[in-house]
Length: 123
Image 1 (cartoon, rainbow, N blue to C red):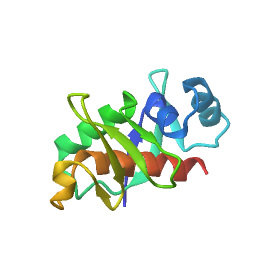
Image 2 (tube, rainbow, N blue to C red):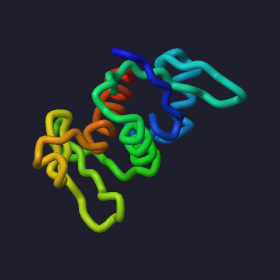
Image 3 (tube, rainbow, N blue to C red):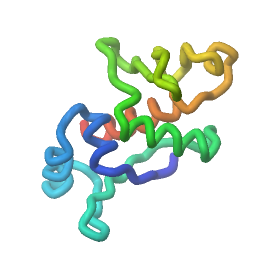
Image 4 (cartoon, rainbow, N blue to C red):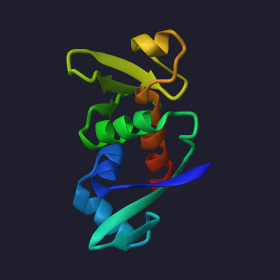
């Protein structure tokens, strides 16, 4: 497993709290974080090696823009399509998007991996 850093906004989205709460938790040492240039970088242990770099970038953007959200079911997320017209159910093991239905790894699953990593780190 490798470590990535996420922004306070990405962490706040994953945890369902405000950016300020993430900053406070980082300052208190409840999150593994470092301050760089006045901004917090939250360290998350997550394996994204099975995804292509552009999928990881798209996943990070989706997390930051809140295009992927937790549902009431544990481990299940709702992801909005790139054009915003469709939502998909996504889990670490699969996705209901076209790629996911064909067994191809999609960026939705990469986003779930990031969100799950932040949630594990905060627990």
